[in-house]
Length: 368
Image (cartoon, rainbow, N blue to C red; front, side, top):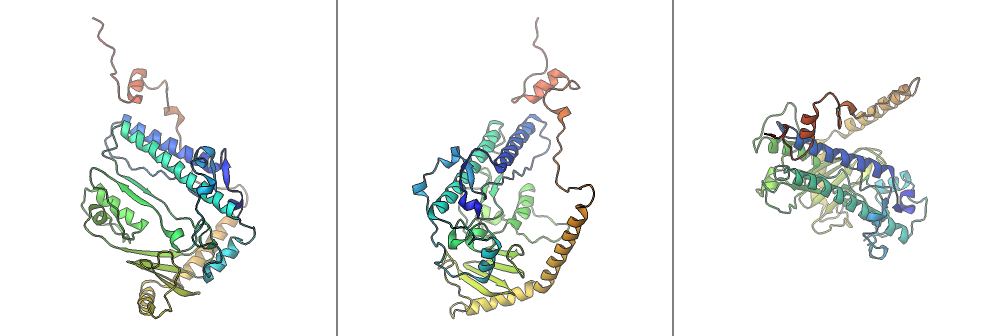
């Protein structure tokens, strides 16, 4: 919880170092593509760590917000009862180990908002590179994330649950030459991006896959012609002592784990998940239907066994790799300095013409 109590402005963090490098490399790749032959389209993933804990951000973005204008959680600690999973998370993250004051909460949220603005500025930097190279009209840009942040709601921080604060992520698809701007209310999943990208790459045609995929294309949503409204989720990480699964369909969110009581929320009537309807007469029939669907869709006992077996194998691998000379499996980006900037093996006139954008002529002007 030092992420919360130590929240505030900073000069640098390792996450700022990382994200600055990612954006620099991505911007360079855009310019390299524009200066190249463009024989094939490009697909680029620009993966930033922000916004994320620990909650620290340079003053340029910290000062975009004032401490007294930062909102506090709608439901602070103690206003809603804990679920069994929340009780475990409270212990796993030692959330009661430090006193968290209102000023701590405001500072953490302020830094998080600043981190969002930092990401926004960097997306703008990449969009500018697309614009000045003439690639903006033909490039589809997707902005999304892998998880949310509770930011003190219900007294909780970070992710690790199926509550809306943790599980909802942004999904923005920008392709002005293909789709009109609209807001889509349906619930969709990150696994839907694969078939969406495939269909976009094939100009609206669908194709077969070498193996089964679980996602569904978002093209109907993007074109305003309908689309599904369903998300399936599995959680098997911190605080889980058995698989936790979720079905979000229409207004309903159903959460089930063999170790815990069921949860059912009507998000249309109860968007902040205050009232669990799983055992309420008004929701019991809906919960029964979801319970039967979970039993037919998932082998939770088999999933539990597979996770524990995977953990045992990974512990064995870590133990083996710690003996003798360490053999890290980390990805090592390849950088060929011999081909960067100005090098003698390339004709200087050709190199300077190719390296500049817009491209300049390669021959000397006629002196006659």
